[in-house]
Each structure stands twice: as structure tokens, then as C-alpha cells.
Amino acid sequence: MAEIIRPVFDVVRGWAGGGSHGSAYDRTFSNVQDGSSNPLKVKEGIFLTLTSTGAVVPCDCPTGTAKSDYQPYLVVEGNDPYASYSGDYLGKVVAIRGSFEVLLSQTPVSANFPTAYNMFVSGAYTPGAAVTLANGFVKLWTSGFPKMGFVTEYNAAALTLKVSFDI
Image 1 (tube, rainbow, N blue to C red):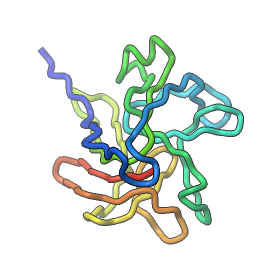
Image 2 (image 1 turned 30 degrees about the vertical axis):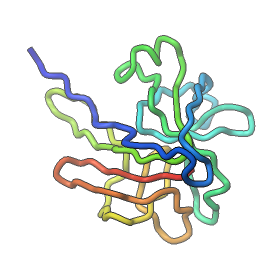
Image 3 (image 1 turned 180 degrees about the vertical axis):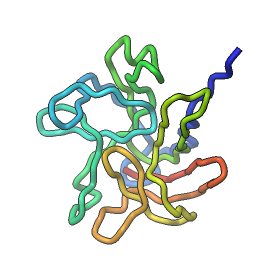
């Protein structure tokens, strides 16, 4: 019998009353798009944001913008049929926003996992390093981009990353 290996994802903790938004809260979205009005299937660990039309698209923080310009939501239950049967069946995504710490992973292609699944962009992460969001994924912050969170732990051997957010 083949072993089923899933990507590592967990909301490690949330803070009640902490930060500018208080504790993390959830929201359900049904109009998830790829930015070109096409339906999009997403897995947990991806960040989405609302558009002015009410659609939800992967969150991208370009240079010259501020953290306050965004309302990113972290997907905790996606609609991708390979990761969430219930989300796919209902056609909905559950996401959270607020103050929380999250454990993300990169899952390379293997005999047990035929497609790579990365929740963050590869980089030289260190505790305390700032991160931003690019096309829904966490990536190391570079000058000019908004700082969206901070690394609390990185395990290069296990390909896992813990990040603290107050969004």
C-alpha cells in the first residue's frame, strides 16, 4: 500500500487582541479567480486578496506599495480537488486574516507526491527576516516591497518555514 504524503501546513497560533486586527478570523470565498476572470483552484497555504469587483485573486505585493494597501487572507481550506475534496465539491475556499503564526512547506516531486507543491519561494530564510507576498506565495523581503510578516523558524532539511503575520 502506498503511503500518502501531504504538504506540511498548520496555523500554529493566533493572538487574541494582539496586533492591529485582534485575533485571526475566517471568511469563506466562492469567486476565486486567476486575475484574468478565470476560475482558480487553490490549496492551503496560499494568500489571496479581494479585488474591487469582489473576486478573490492570489495576493501580489509589488514594489512601491505599503502593507496597508492589502487585505491578504491565508487559505486554510482550499478548493483544489487534489488537496480538499470538500472545498472542491462546495466550490468554496476558507481563509483567515489577522494575527497568527503559520507553518508552511515545500513538497518536491516524489513517488508519493507526483506534483511539487510549494507554499513559499525558495530563499535564504533566517529567524527575524522580513517576508512579502508574490502571486500568493511567501517570499523573502527585498527593498521597495511591503513587509508583510517575519520568519520565526526555518528548517532547510525539512523544507518548512514558520512565519508570523499581523495582517
